[in-house]
Length: 205
Image (cartoon, rainbow, N blue to C red):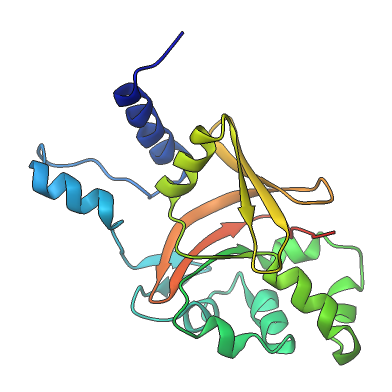
């Protein structure tokens, strides 16, 4: 069955709402053409909760992540890698942020080893593999996946590729080693980018 461009865009929007909880909300009334254009151009930036803490859209990625009870390991790793200043800069950045539970899936002793000074280069490589330049919101990612025929290749700051696709109502990130991570919370907007929470640490080659 062939979809018209208008229908395809509508389906992409519906998919974005379904896949990214909280990314879309029902309107009380039909918006005007001007309001629709503004909403499309700039995603709504609201204060949301992550790891039991409020994520304020006027604070940086590091400032917000530091308050999340679910991202203590990530923040410690960013600090050990010397990336605090970078991720506090203007960006913008899109960060796929693994939770503490995601890091706990790694083999025993992996995190402890990675944060040692001798392994700073490896840690930096892994962390920057989770960062994409620019602000890629939920709708942007869904549109890229649809435009790519079911997948979208995201070039990371590390230089590698994360492949985004859909599996049911979830967005899946496939890393260069074949591992997969699920986006569990999206569109956590920051002053210098956006965070999408993931349930697994992605690994570069």
